[in-house]
Length: 396
Image (tube, rainbow, N blue to C red; front, side, top):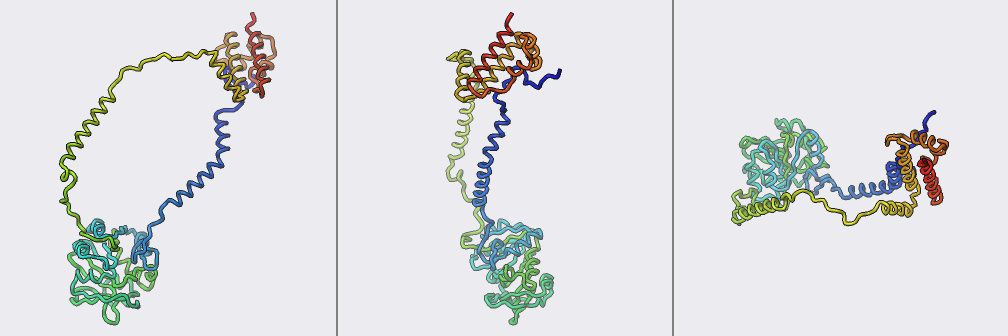
């Protein structure tokens, strides 16, 4: 005879639900609301996340406009050049490593302090539309205005960068009165749009027109080739666009007094506070001794606990759980009465009760391990049947 797949003796079956099934039901009920909440969170994050930095300054690597230079910056980055965009001379000096290229976009907002700091750098300099700065570096070089119309110009020099470009579209130019600089892309008046020379072991290059690297003109003729070669000589490029807040001295005085110099008692008071904190921690964290057992102020009798649980089941209309508790108690008591171990399974309990009472095993199975009742009447009838079953088993 094959034993039926009954639940083990003593197990509270309840109304047929388990923790996993109830959790799955709650998950299915809450899933639409969670999807709505997730969509709201994603929308808020999209609105809250900052947009990619953009600038409106001409020649800025973050400016996507016609006068910006984002296209050149992105191509340089794809070629492995690290670009550090700054707007003050102090930041440019701090970012320069001695083995990098510093490009200066315009000099209209540069002051004497800022210019002196750039002149003192050991890095290669590229001056774009910065005639005054170039004249400070090399007084014999004169710059002509770049505000006029741009024209196509051939290299007409031996500089490798200019030869690779072939020709460019630019305005303005530089005149070299010493002959030590290489001037390329000359205009009709002899001024060149590109000039380069060596100074104190570094290379100084100058582009007469900001339009050479602007987004709307960089793709004309050899503008891109010239600009990418001049700016991409080193793996690190400091892109300096002077701004209105670039004022004051560039280098800070490292000998400025600190807080401890201005207020001498700060140090001793700080250490005294630390000592007080440590003493307080040791004082409050001292061992208080073993845990003391304390008798409960109120003793709740088992009968009262049982009645309280019954009232809770009745209020929640949990007929299945109440029936499961009655059945589990009956199964445990009759198994103990018949001398069965706690590990006895449902088949062993049913078989022993059937032999002790003479009832059919199927009736005992239905009574002790059957489906839960659905109402108060069914629960009362089950309680009476279980009581009669126990009385039959305990009958001498």
